[in-house]
Length: 112
Length: 114
Image (cartoon, rainbow over all chains, first blue to last red; front, side, top):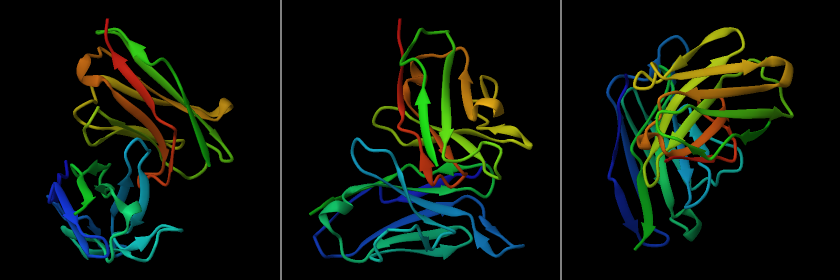
């Protein structure tokens, strides 16, 4: 199984400041034949269903604000919120879908 | 694609959990994976497994001995069955489309309790 580890478990960021979430996989999720990283990010607000916000590690889902960006390749990935807004308070999960699927444990983002 | 879940919210210990996900505005025999995920109270997301109409289902190794995902093509839906449940199986269960889940069902809280 591919194990996904996120850091930190939680972070508090001032409004308008940058939030950075890291995700590490126990093995590479880069598929050489199509040069794609099989890595997704989800946002889950309290009491709501998770929402896909990023796939192929850096492709924003339709309708997701451009303050959200994804980067990384192979085994190390980052989700960045460039200017934190009140509506971004949520738990964020990374997920590999290279081999079956596994999720990271989640990172909770709150306002400082 | 719209996904609508149904099934009981309470299951007795050692019993069997069964949930169904009805698909609308789409077809289960399209080239998509259909997925089940769960989330225990206050915990993270756990992938249960997936099915494609042309392939065998695949499962989380930790649940493989107890879980079955099946597809009902004539009624455009898919289901999950989990046997020998315990309190540790209490969770919100979600169905979804894709392995990177773009569409989600509404979620069903299943409580295992006598």
